[in-house]
Amino acid sequence: MSSLHGFDLRMQVNGQPVELEVGYNELLIDVLRDRLGLTGTKRSCDMEVCGVCTVLVDGQMVSGCTTLAWEARGKNVETIEGLAEGDKLHPIQEAFVEHNGFQCGFCTPGMILSTKALLKEYPQPDKATIQWYLHGNICRCTGYKKIIDSVEAAAQAQAQTAGAD
Amino acid sequence: MITPLTIVTPASEREAFEAYQGGAGSAAYYAGGTELLLLMKQGVAQHDVLIDLKGIVSLSGISRAGADRVRVGSCVKHREIERSPLLGDLLPLLPTVERHVANVRVRNAGTLGGNLCFAEPHSDMTLVTLLLDGEIGVFDGKATRTIPAGEFFVGAYETAMQPGDLLCHVDFPVPRAGTVFGYQQFRLHERPSCVVGVVLQPTKDGKGCRRAAVGEGAAGLAPRRSPAAEALLENVSWEEAAGRAAEVGRVLAEEAEPLEDLTGSEEYKRHLIDVLAQRAISETLGRREANNA
Image 1 (cartoon, rainbow over the protein chains, first blue to last red):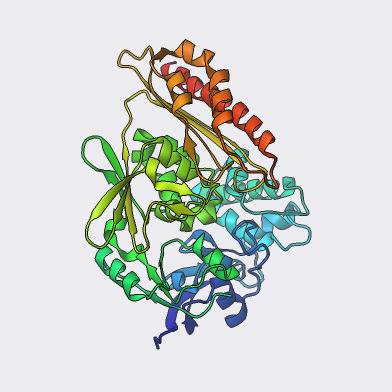
Image 2 (image 1 turned 45 degrees about the vertical axis):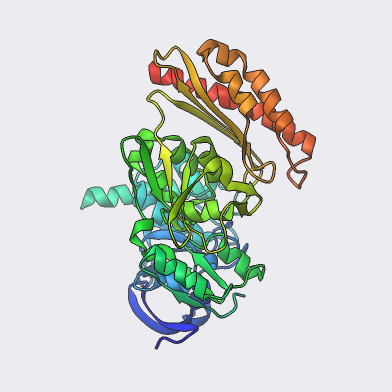
């Protein structure tokens, strides 16, 4: 029910319809983490720079920390929890595991969702494109090389799957 | 934390204006939120009403406006500019610079109009709008008036708009075919600490430069063009223009009013502006040669 300070938010989260009463002032990250228990989305810089709060809204990556939940109405929100199918990891997740694309893992949900957006837009990215697209996702552990290796491997895996269809 | 508020969704510029007037001083226009929400989260800005402009059709879209203008709606997102074939064709400086504004997430949400209204000193789009002689259409409740970019950016976070004014669109004159540009940034982190841009329009015979736009941004309170630096590059052959790069750098650096901050002293930023200006001219002329090759 809509009120002065809140509204009925209807959206899809990881393919599931969700409906809840939300304040106009509530941020998407808080609704995902605190209301829906999806704590894979992290908060760090809280100013759209570091990328750990990356979620996809209708396939477009945004900073959950600085996006009002209002913006998700009628949309499909994807978080890291939505990628694996049961115990079967998503191919991008597989690639990050295979190529050690993380150490502490804090930036990883954002890295993986950004990679998903990247590969949708640029299915065969060269290294410069990967660096350019992911420059807004900061990692303090890896030095990035293994992340880029992982993204390249994920792109290859995606191309092979597409070729097999 | 953002304090409780209400969001309204006007369908027209007039409805938006009226919502602003009805907000008793505590309403704000809201589009991408990439700047506004940061302030609200920190408690620097507090608003009881956000007027969501994204449903107003007239504020969207990139299209030709007459024979010699391109109109970009104020709610057009950075990424739409970055990927616009029309702009890539007619005003390539815009998409080229947009590729490096903030990051993909911010560009997916933030809008051109919001960026210009906010007038953050490190904004790239303020300098680019200035260099391209953008004409900013502002609705004041009665009519839409045009503010030239040269009069729009007054200072840090300060524009020529009055409270309640609604930025509707920016019209960019299409420069003559063969116009080339250079854009050089120095940045230690996401927002640049010094930027220099150059746009050179050719003479009719293509043998030299007829008109120049040269400006710097991010180092001071607002982007600035330098008529003195521009005069050095106008009505000269391309060879002469190349030979004047050092002088342009010197003039631009002298005229600038850089502020000392964590990214460098005033002296250091003047040096950066000098170097970036020379590189921007070299980039511009290199682009001309590549086009002609």
